[in-house]
Length: 310
Image 1 (cartoon, one colour):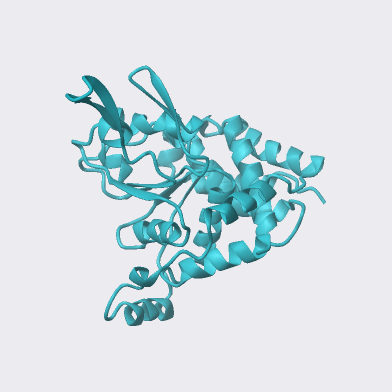
Image 2: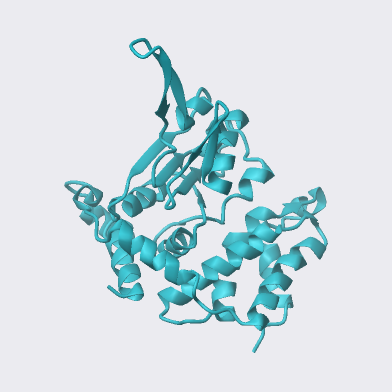
């Protein structure tokens, strides 16, 4: 299969379950094929967990889900050493983090100590346990979910961990016609039960390698850097986006260009992905928050003010 065929086949397979969310699926796959992690933030019932499961079931790779709760421990994620009486030695039993796709469901319900267990894994694709380092699979991909309107019994993610997510976005509500179609499709059983892998691990690796070969002109690189730097100089922002945001912007834009059958990145690709990549990486001061501005609105204003290369 060609690169576009791999993307289209995977996207169509996911849309069998997640209807009316083609834009969200495109963002998710852009992060996945550009080695980024995703934070899905939306109200309950919009399909965040289902989207993660649909991606995992569409690829012939290993999937694990962790339901984050206040009593979850780091060892529940990473694994634990258990003494083997026969060999008189400790054996390490891998935790669910040793998978290809990891769903961290309701990540903000776990304690900061447990949340931090993901930091090294997401940043370096390795974990350090009891003075030993373990490499994670090259396809290691985290999809975390959280509910942005319910704060009782939750622990906000620290800035260092938010920066590890390449993108943050929500799914939102579908239109009435699409919601009726959802009712029809799930009247007897859930369509995700019938979902089977449509591409292999080899296909994923192949497409990931091709994403890195997409050309980016110096003008577009300067445009991306100017957007990110503007977050550090805009009034109302205490901390702007880090250079990691520039890297995420570049890689995700390359993936979008590949999905569109192009061998080069356009400013449109950068603009398409700028808000989900940068909005969660900025810290607003109290006056900006109380005035009703959101981080998304600030990024939109930056996009309007920065000159677009022609």
